[in-house]
Image 1 (cartoon, rainbow, N blue to C red):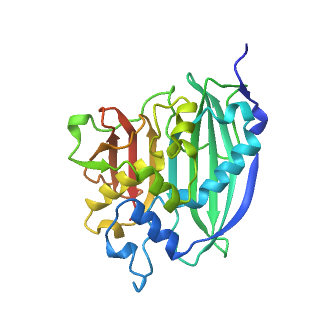
Image 2: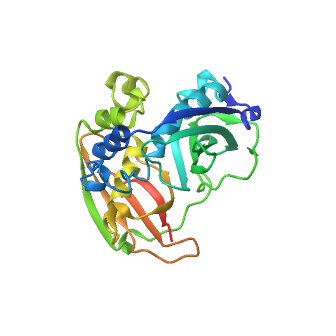
Length: 298
């Protein structure tokens, strides 16, 4: 029997624009799910408005990811996808009261050893058409073939996915700091409702076991967001530190309950802004988030 296949014709497939209103309740709920306590995330009297966690765009992008998958990926393939890479560019932070419009386009399809690697580019603008965020969301469809490497528009800027090279970063002993992060047994359920990101493998044990997982697992974006919070906590301005880019690759599953270890570097100057490299180790010591870096806005 031949392996399932994603046709090259899916590249360029687009969904949206979809408009969504960003309210303070959503911003605060996302921060609360991550265990944030800084007043800026919750003080609705703050003159500059509520802070948005840097990874909040995943919340309003999720419906577009579902729509794009339904339109571009065959039904017999959809269940094989895992979140492999993530690259977010923040042109500015989302704000309460924003009416944002997001469009998602299949930007690339490439063959990898484990399967087909598909990159979805999600572009979000405000009511005036000014860019707010751009995300390149890479999924690896395990055991799935694709016709050839194909891209649409500018090549995606995501890190190399599994099966093609490795990103560079400090060795484990080269990190300048590390911190343990406890993961409660209920975090996936709380994150699901607060982020408004519904995928039953994270909350329904029967579905997770049916998908071949050992149990429900924590969302990759939740793991990444927790790490981002720890990186920001090491900066002089804390959560108010402006972030322009976050990128990473995902690896090991995070079980619940468990603990994570977040390791990071000191900021390194670059032409784009100071760069902080980091990784997240699962309880078994394997990297759950790797080759990660955050660029702080100048």
